[in-house]
Image (tube, rainbow, N blue to C red):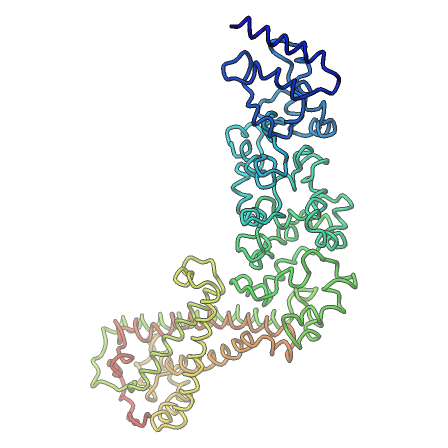
Length: 621
């Protein structure tokens, strides 16, 4: 049987040799199929149907297997060289990272078949079944690059590039079926693939703008005009290119919170260069751009998560960043009114006369004065309260106990208890939400974390509205009701209160008897009440400026919102400390009312050493 097959093959070979030039591939294939067309035959099996459907199906077998032109051919023909036909592509490939790795004998490196598929079944790249069809490229590349063990020796920056690519704006667009979505070869190249450190690479830092510009031509044009683009073109390595801001395998849409160019992340992204000493010193840039921004109204609001306020790009631009000296720059003096006016209609020209990052010599003098005032006032006031209360506590503890009261004293009517309850709720909500806005990342703000910055801001403003309405009602109550006028007269300070303070101090120092209070309200209660009134006025005024910022910026100096922010914050600290140190002592820790003054619940107070107020207890609406 073998002899008969060999005879027939020799006869076929003889007929092919005798055939005229140009009689071709079909007869040659018929000759080769004698050995390679059957599984278990004399040579490696070739599926001739699949080969015929491939892009090489019309070629002679000997166009690739040149040393098999005669039958029988060598038992182990020489390896096929794709370069015999694909000369240009092969020359490019041999200079690539893959080609050089193959030349060094690294078996892990990708050769032609690893990307294009086996020669006998290789499809045109336009066919859906081709491994190098655009739809299949991410999966083709990932066969090697997602294999962590295989890639480990090469220490690549992306350990799982397909996974990271799938979460980018390009990967999501690709998975959504958009034909123009960038795939691996659009950025990294195909036959000309090089590592990012190679100056010939498409992803070499200096080449990145041109690579991205193949799809984003308009953006590239604008970027080339910008100061960043000009610096990159001059070869300054510290100049940011596309990937410096947008990332590489982390490029996400601007609306995505994970994006480095999301509104809430832009300042951090810019600060990656502009807050570093190395870059600022090298290029003579100001060292305080980030800190002075964070100290402004915009910066403070941004730190607490307000996405509506201006960030770096809001003023300086994105791809079109130019120095302030350039007339085309959005921060050029002549263009500032329109730049600021995008967010603050009608206030642009006024804002243009101020400073965004603060005056060249530092903060405005008013801000410095206010800060110095509060840094002195807070410790003096709170410290004085603490000393007073410690003296009171020590004297009462040394006096042998509390004198039983002769009777229960009406202190708060039902209406006044409702006012106190609303004030307590509004004050607590204001303090908690306000400090949560100032310190959005603090652990104690977890209660408001699910609501985000918007929820904290809304809670603060609704509590402020309740506080203001309660204040208006309280003023009406004091003026228009009999009981209110009596309470107001009792709370007004006078010379008797000065004498009461002196007498109380003598008692604290064991220099005199314990004095009786000169009226229905003691001087500690009067101090607390009028401190609340003054603090409320300050908080309402400064809070109103912060809420109605556009109005303030239109009619007031540009530094006023910054001053309002500072005063609002320091006054809140003072108010909260006063409540903790002064009010809590009066209603909880004072030995004469401990463990609690229940007047806010029952209306009556016990433990006074003077006659209770004989004023009216009615007259409320």
